[in-house]
Image 1 (tube, one colour):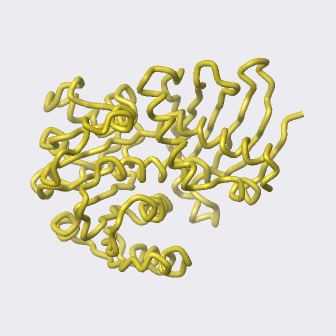
Image 2 (image 1 turned 60 degrees about the horizontal axis):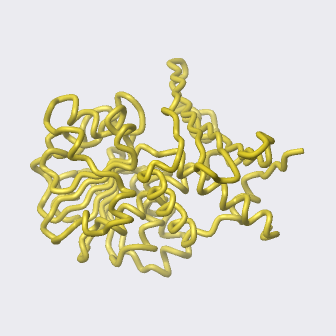
Length: 325
């Protein structure tokens, strides 16, 4: 009989510093072609608007394989319900038995996505960061910032959002958390994207925008951008010429990002060739492929890869088996 873990239990089984290392390892395994990850499957709904992402895969020779379903239904908050939901299933790679059911309500997906942002910044952000820029006001905006405290040295952040009430609500929420109080991070909000891009050397975009929010001529030399909002067909946060302008262009998965990430728009418009895009796993294994000066512009396109779900699911299982509940 498979074990069932609920959200409160799952939260006690995830160690963020160790997860950063595990996700790094996972990206390397993926880029070494040691992970079997079929194409992402999508379900789209119009009334009410929503989508489901289905990701699955396994590390060759490992003990487990993983299937993950994560949904987003954007009118749920009007009903008093969270916009996201989902679960992860862990199976034996030896027998096919279902071993663990993680009713994580999409929390594990949110966390592994934010950790991927931290990994990208760890390996590509410039050494000197006076301001972090967060584009967006949702759950992922806050989580990306929380994870960055593990990998960058900075004490100021600018948060951009179209709705000033949502910007202030996110700032209030973050300032109430003990880890932010200990970090001493100064938070300010803006509705002026040019102000954010002119001030910030590290920018993380976290929206579900369907038209570019950041233009190529807005980015100053030395900026690193982690773009993680364009995780489905039709989404776009960065103007396509910005990717062509980048000195370093990375993807979590080249095949996925060319299909439905920021890279799709640049490749489809013939502004870049697919072969100029490197994978994050390559730079983790070989840092010389990354930033060589603080004047370079770097971009990482994150669409979310099943290896992240595999790694975080294995951490939960390992911690549970070690009796850490």
